[in-house]
Length: 132
Image (cartoon, rainbow, N blue to C red):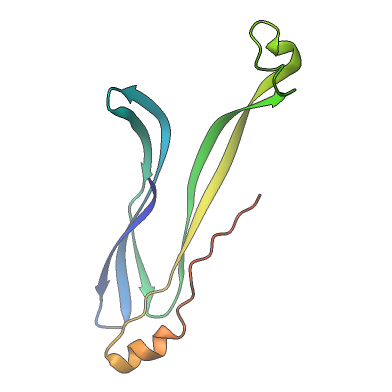
């Protein structure tokens, strides 16, 4: 469950890189109970594309969207949970959270240890950006 990115690169003779990209987003939608515990129901979205980019240039893969629906219960604690009269002291709202994932990919062709050492200092850590 989460984001999985399959990349199959092919280095061409002229310094271009052809990549087969297959991002996959999976989320748990519900859990079905069984004797041994719960079995998660997983919703999976995937796409496959092939791109060609010059060594050192960046491509942007976007349009990977997902919607998460949840029920949020608000009201007076204790009173909203009472049978029959709880609806007078609380309410349940459906909330939909929309998320779009954008992936930046920069291929670098390494021909030896010197190239790896030079590139290693330029690798940036993964950052998660949120619009909330």
